Length: 149
Image (cartoon, rainbow, N blue to C red):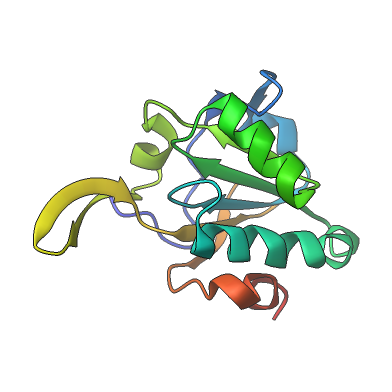
């Protein structure tokens, strides 16, 4: 199922970097930037996270909470957050259940080899739990600008 603007955001629940369970209901009444990225501490993923970090205060003033989701585990997220001083939670989607629910666990291809992975995508979820916007062509270095436009 391909999600589209206006759809109800799929419910999720997963552990963050501290082992605390976070779910969509924790953000009820807030706007949520739910961004999916392939892997901690890689060049594109670092650029994306740092763009959000550098504009975190502005995003918060606009009413956004930010949560990143990748297949990496809690301890890897903790190191990534510490290394780049990220002020937001990262969810450990180790079984890819959240990525599957949002339709971003897809077949990819590199050097002719096919494999399953995350399609870098951001979902802006409104205060009522509906998808307000989907950003599929993420500019990692300017991602916060794409959200704030």
